[in-house]
Image 1 (tube, rainbow, N blue to C red):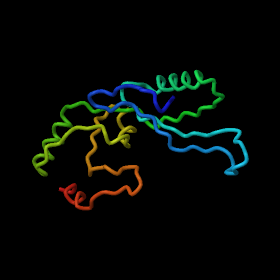
Image 2: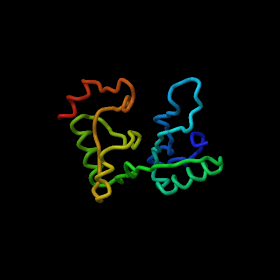
Image 3: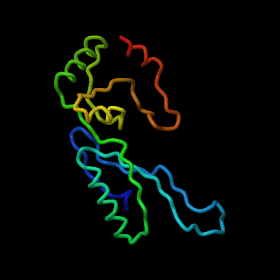
Image 4: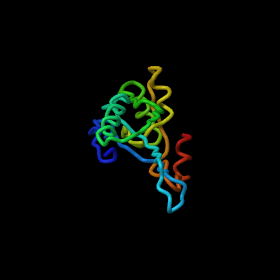
Amino acid sequence: ALSTEIWDHGNTFFPATSFQISNIQAGTGANNVIPGELEVVFNFRFSTELTQEQIKSRVHAILDQHQLNYDLKWTLSGQPFLTAEGELVTAAQQAILNVQHIKTTLSTSGGTSDGRFIAPTGAQVLELGVLNATIHQINEHVNVDELDPLTD
């Protein structure tokens, strides 16, 4: 039920909140023993449409609806953040256009970043870099040809 739940529909800046299972483990590995418990590690990539408390509440409601005996341990790695268009964004876009001749597109599709630790201070956060089409995947890599232009 958690994997089929529509958590939200996202918004102009963020994709919809998504649920991922990163690890499942049960039993000893023996094929003739019924496991006494199951451990599932999962995470949410959530937008500004939901708070962590709303997600927690909905997860508990879904698990309770199925009358499961469960124990949840929550860890928040960071709140979603958004730097609104303004002086910093405009200056960065203009500099990239002037130096690299690239018209930039603003996007939050890259997932979470270390900016989540800076944004709560009220500072504007802007991240630039290479394409991250393989980020957090098997064979994660960047094209070496994309590195040199970042030094201009």
